[in-house]
Amino acid sequence: MVYPFLTLSDGTEIVHSELLEQGRVRVYVEKPDEKDCFHNAVCYLPDYRWESINGFSDDEIQKYQKVIESTAHLIIEFAQYGGFDHAANL
Image 1 (cartoon, rainbow, N blue to C red):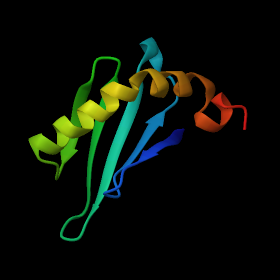
Image 2 (cartoon, rainbow, N blue to C red):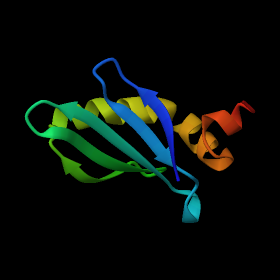
Image 3 (cartoon, one colour):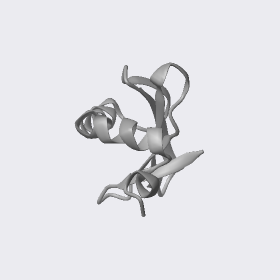
Image 4 (cartoon, rainbow, N blue to C red):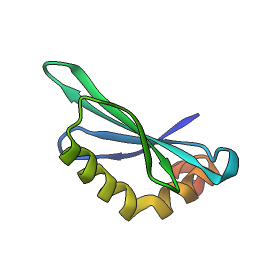
């Protein structure tokens, strides 16, 4: 299952998985691109291990790293409860 988390002003979507084995969470970053259709990457929490980076520059990944680091505590908590809507009891 994948849960929406954040949409940035440039159209980048950040979504996350449910809590996985060993307390890990898969965070998926996707941004529309006119030339390539979409750029995307996967970051695993809590160790911030990036995989499957397609189309993003190193600078962009560093920007997303900062966003994810500053919200990781929320992502991990929401992953435990089935996304924001369930964690917020909506």
